[in-house]
Length: 417
Image (tube, rainbow, N blue to C red):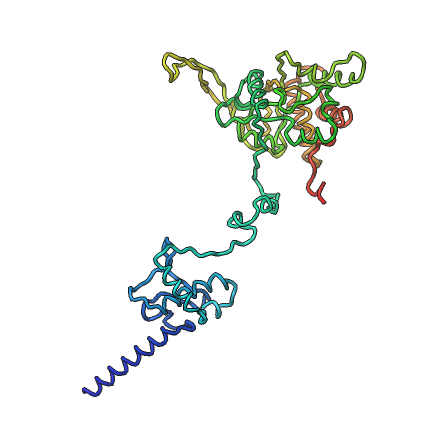
């Protein structure tokens, strides 16, 4: 009996000795085994998945199931930790292998770093968000696909003193002040918009000032006549070619007459006629959507009231939104929109968007939308304007009379080397 106990004790001691020897010089973790080192159970390995699974705390440190962590087992854990990031594409049989050539200096540095927060240093792959700090941001953005849906890029802003001054003058000229042209909403959600954008003005200077030649005056992009106000979401739709303004028939007829007199003695320019420097003028326009536009438009009826201000003894006016109308496609019930922006700038913007539509079905749908608007407002008159001739007249002004082809938006692939 005693002999059997002695043999059991010796076999137990020899088994512990073999376990200690195995943990003292780790070479690999065997697939299909208990998958944990006996001393502290730091690392587990699953041969079917071919990866090492470790418990990582929020500080980046490995979690240990026992406080009796030995130096060799810690070296095994950190050696596997390095292999995960260095050989992430290695086969499953190699992913579980420990680096047996780990030097003593590496082991000591790894053990000393246990009490410090430790984050794996993994090189970001090219083209990912993590590579923004490592790579040039502009180059990364250039490699993005340009057909991402619903992606809006804020236009370049101008903050010089003249632009601020002209913005104030535009607020004074606009019938709705600083409210949105379509919704009548005011506040921080309102954007200052341009019919002729900054990119167009760069073309204007590069191409020997075609706008100034067409309209008979030095064109200024920051002019109060070139600026109006839209709510942020309406502005996005406007820049995305989703809608345009169309001048009324009498305004279009007058601008054709003035444009035909260009170059003749005593003739006035288009700018002098429709955007006089010392006069306040407003015009009415029709809202014409793109055939694919489906976003609803809310228009508010606004009144103002005087209330005590937060300052002592002062008063201030505030907007009161009494009721709201919601307009949906085809938006034919939107009333004419009154604005101070001159018709030649409106035609410039509308033709850039109309000529860009090269799909015959969309062109036909646009004709139908405009014809329904003309019928609703001029159905009682003799000789209802024809939508096709209406748009063709504006197209002829843009291309032949004013010769502004350089401002047409290029299609994908054009202008690239």
